[in-house]
Image (tube, rainbow, N blue to C red; front, top):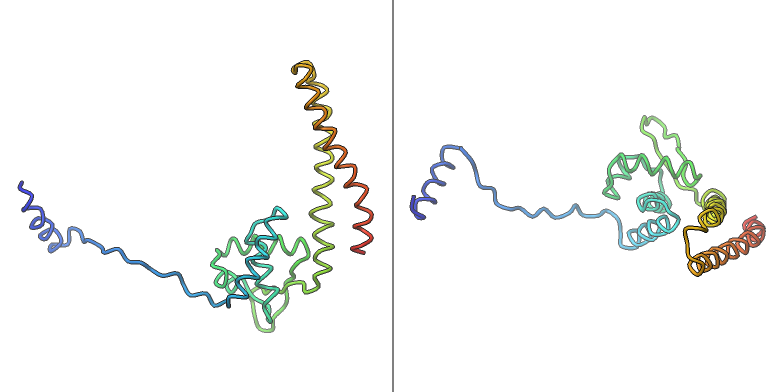
Amino acid sequence: MLSGDLPVILGLLRQFGVFSVAKPVSVPPPPSTLARTENDMIEACGRFAQSLGLARSVGEIYGLLYLSPEPMNFEDIAAALSLSKASVSTGTRQLMALGCIRKVWMREERKDYFEAEQEISTLVRRAYERILKERLKNSEEHLAEMVASLEADKSKYGDEEFRVKQHRLKQLVKIQSRLRKVLPLVDKILG
């Protein structure tokens, strides 16, 4: 077969419907229905959620609902944020468990609708109680386990290596102790 035959053969194959050559099509993303300020605020909520160890989408869902003048359903949330319904479902469950959003009843609607808790001080208090305080407690328990483990494994280290590890763990225990002393003050501030 000569190289000049290839276009002829491809043309015949296409003509008889054996295959077709698709041209690459660039599909632009759907235009966002959100204004720039809304996008920026929703993105900030997503980053804040990540800093708390939550999924970014959880924060974005809260941000969208917080800015929305009306309750929204799964489909509206998914479309506005370009998220899957499964992601929206998971995110709304997490947010409801944290007390950040609630389901609301809409007359003559069968879908679930959600609205955000609007009182920021309530959200801060809940995040502190249900996320940060719990993580501090867990890290304290984990740190105690590490100290005990280091002592149990003392023979596996050289003297200098053991002293360095012991010193660094003691520093972490000291920081943990300071944090524990600050917690009552934070409790008082958050009321």
